[in-house]
Image (cartoon, rainbow, N blue to C red; front, side, top):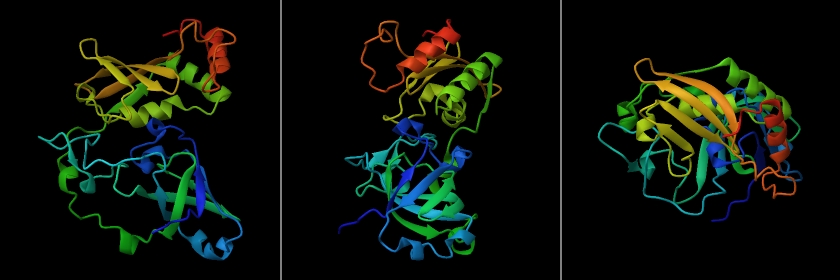
Length: 270
């Protein structure tokens, strides 16, 4: 079998740890699907604009292998791992993904969408309309998912964090607050809710503090288990002073952003 992508998805999530575990947790981050020209896809899109949601079938293009079991972000009671076919893990025998996204509008060969959990540059294999009558079964049993431990936590922030986050958002495409809310709202920090590709979290269980890495920035937070509350405290640079010297390699092209950030917030070194 040989599949040829019909287009490409473009959005905010560049690295694996940027992507939310479910697209509906990433509302407010519009992306777009650009279909390939010259294949009569204009006709294929006819009548799709009347649907609020669409299924996007895509390729997990950055995964080279698969795993028979996976550790879910919130495990069921008494289990650490579940079978891959009983999960939404991206590490599958055939690297095919399925996402139900909100369709905002269609312009030519471009579909503007929201609530997508795809990485920037993801190859799109097919598009189908979401039909509630056929696709929604709210009373269906959900297996081990119904046994998940942990409820959603409330994520708040200090004014210091809010100021720093606003400055970064104004000077880049980064959205640290949205990322932190998606990643930390499940709590269970002592159990490490991240899989091996997302272990960018360190926690001091005695002090009830933690640091979450977002690209080259670090988000410092506190948490309270009794009230199930996370408070984002401040942002720091993940670079050392030596890293930010003029002439140093700039692998991610963001070192000037960090230099300017530290001029604005000099106490924000890690």
